[in-house]
Image 1: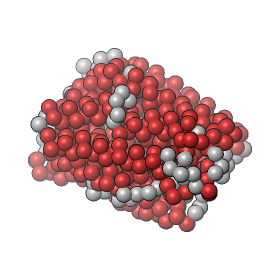
Image 2: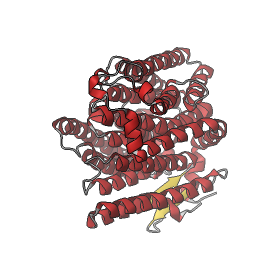
Image 3: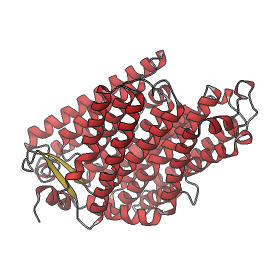
Image 4: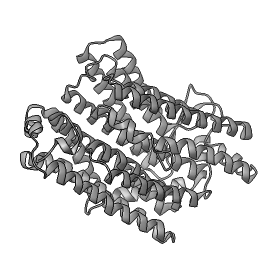
Length: 495
């Protein structure tokens, strides 16, 4: 079904970013940003509602051009719900950043850049062709570098340089893959590619698939392409890291999921499966070996990505549905943990366990804000993380992948261990003299930060409460993904 609102989550934030460049008064920029995100979110929710009807995939072609050559935006169930979740998270984190009163948010280019990255994330989820997807990645790269280095500290510049170099390499691999795909098939449209890629000699198709897997794997930070993330993300301001942690790597996972199911169904599944297992292990080992909350949480980004890649590798409707639910659950859970870390860092001036202690005794509410998403990340029932992990592991066992399923269970236990490590050191440990300014003071004197964190933790609880209906929704989305003909016919406008 044609849906003109489909472009709003991209065009409205871009227009707001342009307006914020012209009008540099901070209060006006804030108003413009929230109005733009509100309009974009309303359009995204409308698209999601329209996409719920069976087979009613939403499509729009910019400029009114025909399907083969138009810039096409497509929203099936998975893309539609991810855009909604992304915009909810981006809006809440912006509230947190304003409440934090950080120097970076007071920079006149913060809001324009923030709007640009919000638009790029939506564009990546909605892209209906590979080149449009590449453009979204480039926009994300430029905006994320600006946000990463906002404060201009030496460690930020160093981490930002590494981040840019590796992402430029990823862009080169992706552009090479797109160029070769176009040379081999004559199109970059995701609706035209399934049929044309299937007609290629198997070695050629496999080579093209590997190139895309490497490019998207670097964006998702999978093994062995994850090494840039634990150094880059901790250097950014907490409000920026929260958006990066919650969303940017998930764009890479989404692209792997989309290409594996639409363009290369049932190909290289075992390779993807074992990449997921290695990613889980490497990430959690890095997490339990560090003594800084921001770095521990950064390594857990890698580890949790492994579960999603594992589900993609298993394949089939049940595994893909579990992966989709994992994506929806993990975005707010991981973001909320970084918001908690941001409050802690603002209070003590550090996220190192050596400088923080006794937080639970000084602020029980703050301890609860950490505990709920932390237990969800570890997969403790009845939280959303348990449901998502259980479904992924069960799909692996049902598919006969017992070793990798065992690794997933083991990694979940180690994840709980690392969360307990944070609790013991930061929340239950002795109060350090350098951190005697009570966290309750931060929550009392900065209610906006606390309200934003509470709101996002509440989102994670809502996902847990409605995990059953969400899984049914994800199962319908997975059935769409495993039936490429539905996607193709919707984009082409044919029955």
